[in-house]
Image (cartoon, rainbow, N blue to C red; front, top):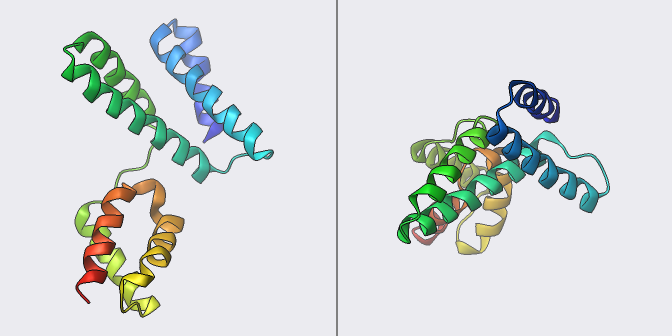
Length: 147
């Protein structure tokens, strides 16, 4: 994953695409900071989580800028989101998330809301980079509340 980002950074540098170069440098900086904090090399899953977090931050900022009528800044963020999103795997649909959660609940023999943390932890360890954990949390809470 990191190798792909470095290759794309080199391509952007050679092509003179200043916007993509800037976005990729920002991403490299975030990855390097995370690596320094962790004090060891990041795994692909950790890299994906960082990229996902960066996309989420930009989406939230884009909404803010749009609400204040700053479509120029929102458009810039949209381009950054497109650049970062190409590294993310395809998100799971809500139906797929529900199916996976049902399987985890069945395997864990969960019977009440007390199992919510463990269900979410299992889901996140396997599929965390492919789903919005807020949606997952809501689905798990709903499912366990209705058992």
